[in-house]
Length: 430
Ligand SMILES: CCCCCC/C=C\CCCCCCCC(=O)NCCO
Image (cartoon, rainbow, N blue to C red; front, side):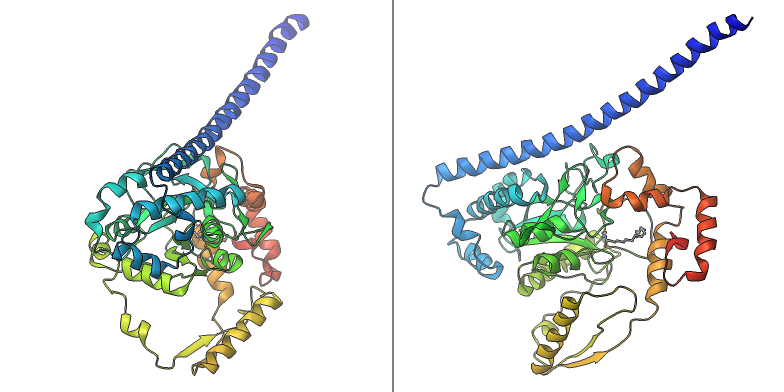
């Protein structure tokens, strides 16, 4: 009897072991293939862009593309409008520069080769505020036919069915979105790395991060490969890469600019919402982008956006302003260099005649832990974690993902244990 039992169970156990191994191996192969497909797609687009630039250069030997990318946005726009520069030359000039910058910084997730087709009827947008201006968009901003990957495998091979409202409006204004830029996985980090497209680095120092989550934008624009870009920001995702890369960025009030057609790994969060905003080399360019976006087309395409146009009068006014500022929010510690920069800015503004008023932002602890962490993970992080199940987690996010994935009773226990020191630890909310 003893021997018979073994003869049945041992092969069964072996078969089960082999099946589990095969299943795991098949899953791993599937993940590898998916990653490879995404990377090959990007390589193909980069190759197509390179070819398009070469062809353009052969056919237009007299055009100096390298001088085009040195022009500030206002001047570039003026020259295109005046006819001394052609939109096709400008687009190819930026494509060439973006390819060069991407080689160094790894900041692109896709080249929108569709943009070359947009040139065919670009003349019909001659009245637009951004007529003929090539622009970059962050990976999570939907552009028809392209993935908005957010750096997770679940969102690959799932191209957007239509343009986001911001892309539609900018196209109507004559802008030509030509490249999508890299992000940290899940858009939840101030670094810029994900397992699909890798890490983007800072153009000022290749050893350093470009910041995140709109890190690809920061790097590409600061490197000279784009003149204007769109990012998104909840807790610093436009402002941090802009600061790290030495360019300008604006996080407008939430829903000042339409959020329709933006991809994310969390759904329905109302307590800490993302905002769309521009990044560029100078403030004037940010203002031009806001002016272009805040138009009837946007208010019609997305009726949830308050129809308040850009206030040119306020923007141009030289009236002295009362400006609120704080040096430290009592929660996130600024580095000494940040404090110094803030003080220097304050002094410059005062010298220019403005009044600077210190204030303490109220209840930062509550804002972060209750609104961002608790609100963002209100379903016990189920939605977010589902996006990480299929494939590799970026090392920069592994720590957080492991915490989010702990069984509920363990989270409760740790939360109880940490409650006495709740002001210095946020674990009980996460
Ligand atoms: C609203 C989503 C929050 C998910 C909760 C995660 C909990 C803690 C991590 C907070 C990190 C927030 C980083 C936000 C970065 C950012 O601004 N991303 C922009 C996305 O458009």
